Length: 75
Image (cartoon, rainbow, N blue to C red; front, side):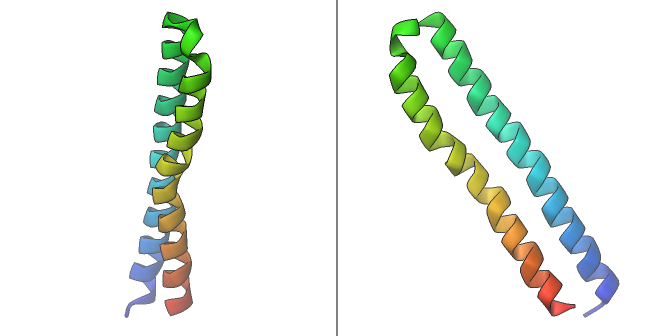
């Protein structure tokens, strides 16, 4: 396999995963804060849901980083 294409794949996978993960986590936290400001009495339940949602959003970037390391091993 061409080494240059593998390098481009590694860079795209890691970079786009980081961008997507950052945007996803920002949206989860922003919507949680918006919900808390609207209904402060639901703070604890919304916070629990946020703590479950953030790792789910971060799972895809972690898989992309693992894939990047696997591609790096092919070089």
